[in-house]
Image (cartoon, rainbow, N blue to C red):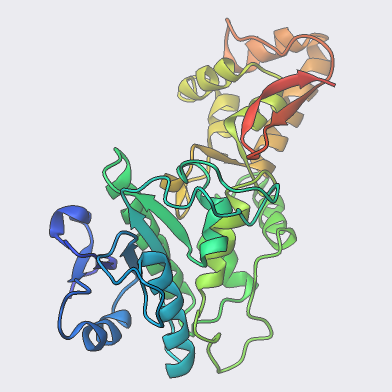
Length: 335
């Protein structure tokens, strides 16, 4: 036993090289003659189950699983029947367009129409998994480590497999003792995590506290609200996107830049997304910048005073963040 998160990989060619070295590795092939018994035993040890989508299973219509996605349904059904709490499940595949014909859970009711990469939060609910991970990508192993670590941390905090709001706040962990910490904590409650209140001595069905991780992945980190992207942060501050990056680089030289950088999300599952910010931290930094603008009579002068020279404010009329049909941010546009 180790203190590292435990990952169970179900794959025809399961090998240690497919998993991060900082995890306890459990490998299982569906071709194993004792597959069912071993799977039932290993489920209780795992913090995360990775299921290869391209499993060599019978492809004809039957009552058995034919691929990784269908194995998810079989596993869920077995867990309900046996009253077994499953850890988070993730599809792990090199077939990036395997779900091109599936209709995502969020957005227009049209097929995905391409790769799932960058759209995991939209398609994962449709497949009833917590996430999808692309085999062979540059960030594959860090993503597995991040997801397994988040699951392990959640299980440690929610020891009774049922998370209260206080436990959710401990899990998401806003920065402590900052001017906006209490506001960020309040925002967590407003984001409506699936808390198991009122608490009882009973567990939360066959999913335990996993719905909290699903909420974090599918809602809180995927869409602006509790957290925001670099583009939203720059827009809220009133600066160009590139200037935001420069401000972060200057965190060691300017107190305001340092306070702003403290708003970068460093909590569980952060490696699964581009950089995210606590919206409460960005709003507070934006308020500080505008207060300084009123004192100096100029936004540009205030920006230079707080973060140095050669930074560019947003120009033109009132702007908004624009998203495409996939709900991906494409830039800013005038109202």
